[in-house]
Structure formats: structure tokens, C-alpha cells
Image 1 (cartoon, rainbow, N blue to C red):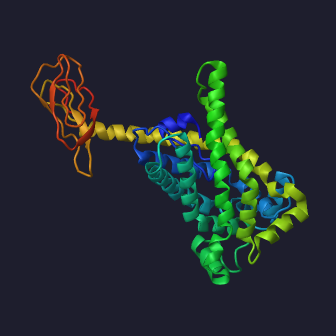
Image 2 (cartoon, rainbow, N blue to C red):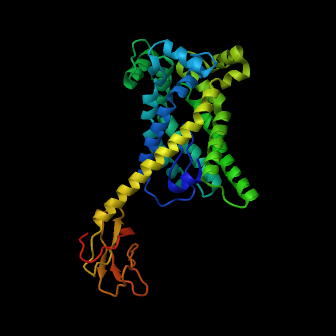
Image 3 (spheres, one colour):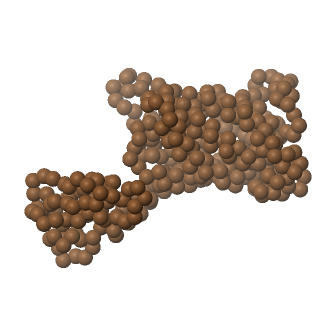
Length: 382
């Protein structure tokens, strides 16, 4: 959502259908990003689960709109105590990792098919969001049913058991009820999330004469995400109602909403959605940074283990990652040559390093990138 996260491969998980992507092909490992993003998403969604439960309950009509604390008390009084505020959270967390993975790689695939440019990136982001959302939509239906207590009788609370019960009672198509309205909400949400954030950042730089700092970018990102959700909220309301109500038509849902609350009924639950936004962003960002830093440290430890001391006066050698699926690391070797104290060497592809006093490196053609090993003092084993 914020350029800072884009430049580091991170993402702020605000539980939106559209995830921001780096528009500048950063040279980063996607797996660290996905692991850190999945854990950050799980943490932020669990922390804000009571607010999400209240939002869905009010949105679908399972709970009357009103004071959040009063609504929480009513849900707990109906059975389950405090655990009632976390119903459906396991499903929400479960879909977090595959959703990020599908969105990440779908975006890359669509980006390859479209011409370069900001508009194409926006379209690729929207298509990626629609793809991942559609493939995982049955989990959203199950989550809505569990959270609002509208699962078929005797279905239990497990994902598989509820999914089977829905298919048995209403048919497999029930798992995709409301999908069209939900996917339609992605178009305006994608345009606002990408466009508004870029507009705010550009305006700030034009007025202040400097690029916005991390906190300012964070504010712009949260505001853009919330605005995108707000515009798409009426469509999501219709979609959620279709998910939890069996045998109703779209016209029935629209008539019911207008009859019971007028146009404002399409925004029921938006108060809880607003309150949960800031803590969700803070927890997501914080957990991501902690996990990503730990992954980077582990990767560096692996590099240190793979890189050993060169026979040439303790000089460092370059370790490269093999390309094309080839196995092996540390495939570069130093050849005799002058080596000034503390000087480093690096190797890219099959090109040897050059420069005054630099050692010559012989590299395997399989090397696609190389990382510099730390200097190993003489007399110390690597």
C-alpha cells in the first residue's frame, strides 16, 4: 500500500481484495515476502477479529447496527462467550497465505501479458486480485456462514464440514453465490487504491519539494485503502447478503436493504471497518518488519556458511546462486593475482571482476548473481 513496502517487497495487509505490487521489478526473493506477509496478515486479522465479526454480523443483518460494545455483548450473550467474537477467524487466517501467493504470481503473469506502464500495472493488479479472490471465494462463503451463524443445521464449525453441509443442502453453486458482485467491487477499489495513493504522494512532493517520509506514506496508504473499500462497500454488502441467505435473488436483497434502512443500509458495519483499519495496518506492518528482518538474517547466515576462506591470503571469494534450476552455490573461485588488504571481490554471470589490484575471478556460466563473502582474517577458519 505504501511505496516503502513496495520498495522492500512488503505489503500492508488491510484485508482488501486488491494488493499493491512493486511497479519497479525489485530484485528480491518472493518467498521471504510471502512468508512474512502471510504471518503479518494472520497476526493483524487475529488482533482485529472481534471488529471483523461485528462488521460482518451487522452487514449481513445478523446483528442490528448500533454501539460496538453493545453489539459485542449481544454476540457473547448468544453463546460462546468471548470466543464468539473470533468465529470464522481461522478461515480468514487460512486463506491469507494462498491468497497472497496467488495474487503475487498472478500479478506477475498478467504483467507479462500487458504493455508496460502505470495503467497496465493497475489493470494487472485488478486482474490479479480478481483471480485470487475468485479461486478462494468458497472460503469466503464458509467464513461468512460461520461468523454469522448461518451454516446449515448440524454443519459444525470446521471448514470442510461446513463446506460439505452447504453443498449437500444448497448445491455446490451456493459456494459461489454473490461472486459477480464481489468481483465487480474490485474494479473501483483497484483504481482508487492505486490512483489515490499515487496522487497524494505526487501532491505532497510538489507542495513540500521532497518525497514523503515513511509515516506520511503510511498515512496515504491507509487512507487510500479505506477510500477504496468505502466506494466498494455497497457491492460487498450485497455480496455478503447473498452468501448467507439461501434461495434469494439480487432483487430481493436490494429491496430488503432499501426497505429497512434506505441507502444507508448499504453501509452497515462501516463503523467497525473504520475502527479496525489503523490497528490492522500497525500490526501488519510491525510483524512484517520483524519477520522479514529475521528471514534476512537467516539468509545472511546461510551465505556466511556457504562462503569459505580463499587459499589466497584470506581473501574473500564470491558465492553465486545458480540459475535455470541448476544446483550449487559458491561456484566462483579466485585465481592468483594482487589483492590489497581488506579488498572485496564480486562476480556477476560469467564476467570476471576487474579493477586496479582486484583479483581475477573464474566463474561458472551457471552463475546468475553473486554475493560478496565477508573478509576472513588470516589464521581463522571460515
